[in-house]
Length: 545
Image (tube, rainbow, N blue to C red):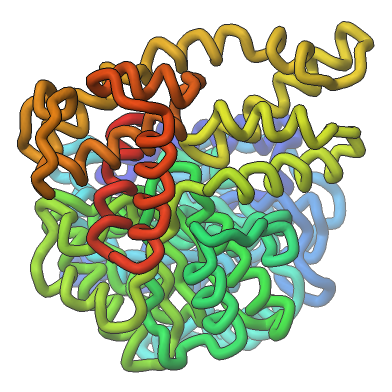
């Protein structure tokens, strides 16, 4: 028992101290089976060791039915009696020496974890807890799960029978020295090391992760998100069907995550037993790393491949993470083969994601890929009005238009601006109107006017179309110059507060009617020309982010 003294004495002393202070109800050590002296000399390395403490009372009729039992047992030898009175304090030395009184009872099998003495000897020969880093945890098992049929005396057989009864009742939590195992309900924080299964299952148990406030009912539809909304609703009605995977891409704060949660909530409303998991891509990576560290990758795979719908946000964070990409690739294939729904979001088109394997990019496009664009003016106004109603605030139309005309980048900034206006109204006890909005958003409006100017628009447009800024000011009418000039004028009207005459003056002294014609022309082209629509979208992103 020298290897026990050297490795576990301090831990046994700690449990003894807790027992003496009443923090745990019972404590025990069990070594089995009993061998002859010759047998112990020849086979001592194969003896299982069990040391543990119980802080709860076992079910009635099971071993240690008294809540105040201290127990020490060596199977096949001293079974011990029972005493309903709390035993006298014991010491670690008594436990190790086998000095136990008649009021001892065997350790409950249901919550006992075993490892052979030989395995402990091999792994404690060099000392230190790091020796367990490469240990094969499949060797550690509950004694009641699959009791050995060899060398079992009457006492061992009796314990096997009782372990069944204990498992069927509320088993007491048992802490196993060395951190190898816990009974159900044990305080995981009290041990120096948890079991890998407990760590992995606890780490990846996201309990769905869905935000119940993100529903289709609370989503504001507009031209910018019409296709994405229709696709999401179709997936919610028929998960795992034609649109699998559903890939939604677009800039920050445009409603991608809202649509994803809305699908998940709709699926669970139709089928409360459906397993729908939402998480950020970085959480998927963290779960996988944890599983690899604990040699529990199979638990990780079982968890993610058993879902009915897997919703992963911001897939672009897989960039450069080769091991995560490989595992997600196999998970992706397994889910598709099983008819389970996958929904992914990203800030860019799949082919534009850098440092992601081509085989993954191609699979992202197997289902349906939809874009969510920045909301147009009408949609921004509708979003503001809906948010105001949700907080029982009266927002005049002119105030909503004023905010929507000046906050154009994304929905989050729009909602943030509205919150500032509402707070300003509340603190000053004034009704919301345009002067109050101007006062509440003065810092934001001043910063925006500095960032988006006609000069800045001309510079960005010239760089985008690979022409000179002077070409935009010139009288040249060639298509390669006239079309970029019209785009720049339309953007100046959309993104600045300058009047049409002021915009015309900035483009070589042109008349305001020329500016008006340019704005109408670009609006028409956006509706029929996909290339023009893409150009305007990209320029808006460059100017507002």
